[in-house]
Length: 495
Image (tube, rainbow, N blue to C red):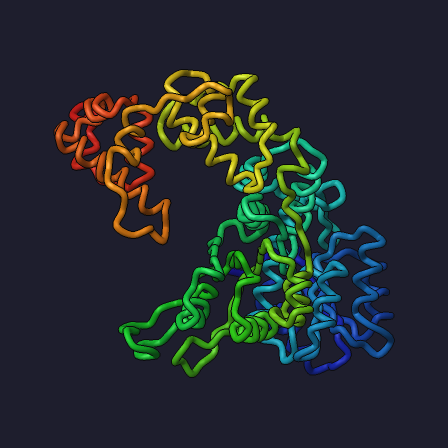
C-alpha cells in the first residue's frame, strides 16, 4: 500500500550508494524523501521544515546520529527517529533507544525491514498521545493526530487504582507504547504484569496485531527452541508438519515473554541473536525468516542479581531492559484495595453471569488487615471463594473465613456446610499414602462427591446443590472450578 504523499522522510548517511538505495526504496513507497550527508546538512534541513520520520546512520563524518536525537528531544519536535547501527553494535542500539529513537536497524540494512520500520513509525506518530498539542507536522501542512485506540483506553482502565504509583504507571505505559524499544516489567508475583504488558500492546500502533504471551518457565527444555522459532517437518520425532513458533505467531504485534528469568542459558544466547538480527531460523530449517515483533518481558526475579550469579546473560539483560516498568505490590497502594476489590468482583460476576454483591464495611476492613503476599492474584482468589460461600447480596467478613481456620474472623466456631462435611476426614478413609499434591488430591475428592450427587439427581444442579447443603451459585462455582462437564447447559432442565 503506498504512503500518503505528505509523509516526508529525512535520510542522513555519508555513503552515497546507501543513501541512494534508501531514497529509491522509500520513493517507491510513495514517501517524499530528502537526504543529507552529515549532521550539518541534516540540521540545515531540520531548520527549514518538519519531517515525519528521520533515518540517520549512527556514525557520521562530523559526529554521531545520537546528537540529532537529543536535539530533537530538546526542541520537542515530533519526528520519529530510526537509527542505523553497525552489525553487532548492541551498545549503540540500546543507547539510541534509550535516547528516544523509535527503532533501530543494523547494517547491512534489510530493505523490507526498512519499509516496515518507516510504516510503523508513521502509525505510531498518528497515535502518539505525548506529541505537543496532539499535532504532527508534515511538509507545510499540519495534521491532527488520531485518538488513542479504544482498546488502549480499555486496557489502561483494567489497571485499577488512583494511587500515585498507579497513575504514574498508566502515564508511562502511554508514553513507551509509541516506541519499538523492548520493555522489561518487574514486579512480585500476582501484581498484574501481564495486564501492564497488554496495555503497552493495546496503546501502541501494533494494537491490531496479535498479542502472544509465553510463560518461559513452563516450556520443556527439549521443546523450547521449536516453540520459540518454529520447526520444519521431520526436525524431531513427532514433527509431522511445519509449525510456526512464537515469533512468527506474533508477527506485526507484541511477543510477551513472561518469567524471562526462568529462560535456560542456552536459549538466552539464541534469543539475544534474534533480538540483534531480527531473524529466526526454524528448527530443521535452512533459510532464516525476518521477524517483526515488539518484545515485552516480565519477571518477579532480580535479574541484576542473576547476572552477577552467572545465571542470566548480561548482554541479554542489557537488550531487554531498554525501558523499565515496575508493577507495584499491594502493600505499597493499600488505598487502592476497595476500588480494586469492587472491580474484581464485577469481573468475576460478569464471567459467571450474575449481579455482583456489595462488600460490607466489615469485609473491606478485614481485607485491609490481610498481608496479601500474593498481591492482586491472592485478593482475587479470596473474593472468588467468598462469592462461592456467600448466599446473600452482601459479602460479609465471615464469608472470607478459611474452612479450617474459624478464628480468622471471630472467636466462635464456623459451622461446616453439608458439602464440607461430606469431604471431611471423618467421612472418608485416609489415603493409603500421603499425596504429593494435597490440593489436587482434595479437588479430586470433591469432584467425586459432586459427580455422585449430580448423577443421583439426574444432573439437576439445583437438586444436587440442595442435597449437599449448597445454594445454586456455590454449586455453579464448584462445577466450573473443578471442570465438571454437564450433559446439557439448558438452565430449564438443570433447574
